[in-house]
Amino acid sequence: MECMECGEKIIGRSDKKFCNDACRNAYNNKQNKDSTNLMRNVNNKLRKNYRILSEINTEGKTKIPKKKLDGLGFDFNYFTNLKIYKNGSEYKFVYDQGYKILDEDFVLIVKN
View 1 (cartoon, rainbow, N blue to C red):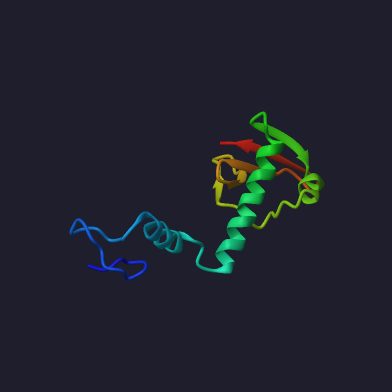
View 2: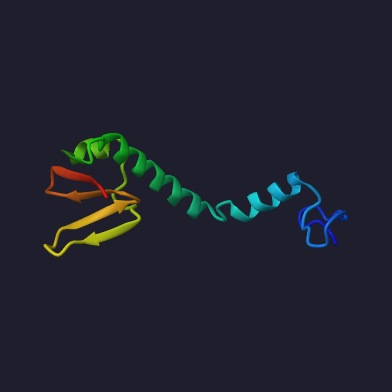
């Protein structure tokens, strides 16, 4: 049997896949990394949006000027899910932090 990462001969158990922890870690890191720049960029934007919402919304519900989010670099095009409530309210979520655009000037941020 050969190591799945470096190709060295494996000594030990018959079901062993890697010759050592370094090879196992290197192999798994390659498998789990973002495979394209697009994915990496989208994930970075989602992380940034989440960080902005989390830092502003410390109380669980916060109303702020939309310009403040714009000024912090929040990108309204990136969110993880959309939730429409029975009353027709539409909230966009970045993981557990949601927001609703109230009008041209204000945004309501909520934590789900």
